[in-house]
Length: 220
Image 1 (cartoon, rainbow, N blue to C red):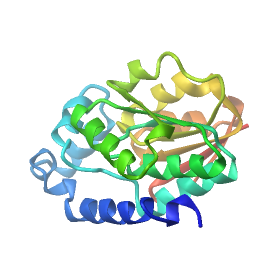
Image 2: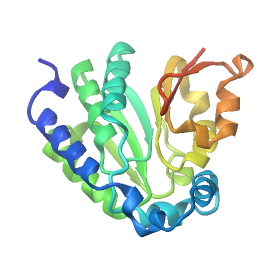
Image 3: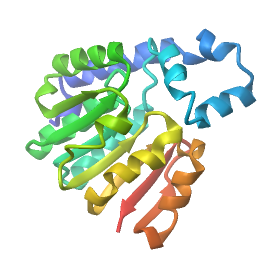
Image 4: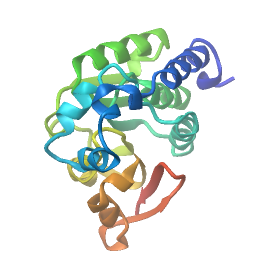
């Protein structure tokens, strides 16, 4: 039995995904009154993301169940020990990643989230899942929290925060990505500059859209 399929993690994930499914962010005033074009503009903006995500602080905004399982599988397959996550939210993806580290024999997920209430919720979820000892929470803007004191070797990078910042976050972590390191970027189509960068083998990557939501890249 692996950690992700057993209590306390499995029932916790089932509950958290069910709660997320029942509370769509599209019903939030921050989104509901916006046109499709305005939503696109906000998602791609490097100036308005803090206000946008602050307005959505009560919503989990998780990866899909399938993407969560993919994260666990990739971390296990690569025998990851050091993982960086941009965008903790309620910690659903963090639970998958930390569960993989537990089954790999240990390690650390460094996860960054700027909304204090979400950090508190994520911490509580990781404690409930019995995985908090494998997670380092960094509260604040990831452009600052991930700019210093990173491990020399990073095995996996998850990008699931403000989409417009994917290229900036990658630039902070890039030199520490080991050969063969995996990058999972959720909804990367909102950041064309990121896709252009990882789409070039000259920059040291091979990449492909893995699902409609996920861009999967490997550091060469």
